Length: 376
Image 1: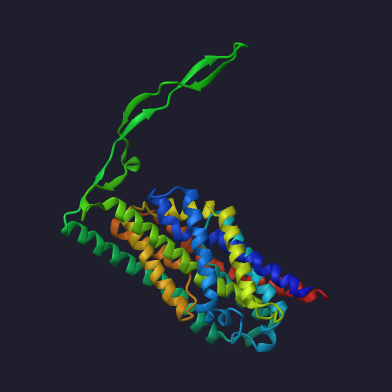
Image 2 (image 1 turned 135 degrees about the horizontal axis):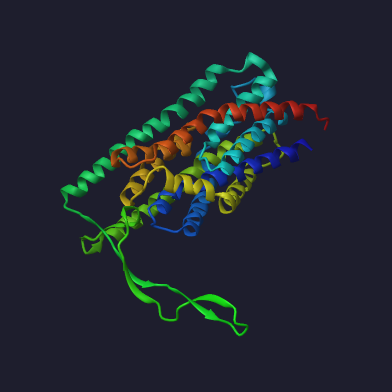
């Protein structure tokens, strides 16, 4: 029974992770109107799934870190009770944030879950040095590093564009405007229908409705098309990196189930993450894409390059950074350079990060106590 409950908890966490995290890799594509929501989430799902499968071979170090080894005594870390409580604490926290539209870190939630369950299980015997050096320091440093790199990369790209004389132009909308006209049915009920011959119109939008596009050509190719393709590839790289980094962290919960092949478990986690992203990513998508800062094509590319680079490097060396913190940090850094950001939204996101760990700790501590009372 405990084995089934642990597997179910792991898949629940994978689902909530996908709902909160999957869209983050393609947030800049949606925010810059490069792609629509459905196309963006489809790309994110496929790329994240591939990253999850690749993590089986290149990110094994993160499995041990998130199984609780070294944080609490091995006789506790290897028990199903401890790992179930950790997964439930993290999963409930991520689910709550997703429902509220806050992009939080599953990594941070797992750390809170490990801490809460560990305190109830062994009291002050929790290895606080391990907690700080292996978890807190990377989680604190990574968003600031992403912030600085995001500012730098975008500033360099923007300066280079001006030196090369590449320009972008705003547009006005010219096309057919649909008009509604009254008609009457056979029972003389007035209804509205589209006119058969829409009238051509010109719309001059305010600043928020303008679209900046690059009209130059480079080596005979449209600069805007090259930028869009590079932007899409960079988003694929971020989504791939996210799957690479997050899947082994969640798989760490399965180490107590020795009868379950860990590779099979990671594939199941990848499927759970994909389902969560496809079914429940919309609210977090709106926050990441539209509310932090208005994102142009070049800004989105810059943010994605920084995020994918940092997360892939961290995954390779088993460093538990948060894709969420890195991505938001990069976008925020770009917003500082462009002087176009919503400080109120940013403060709300940072506040959600601050309370993630204690909320996850409370959930997991309660779950550990409850599971310990069950007699299986």
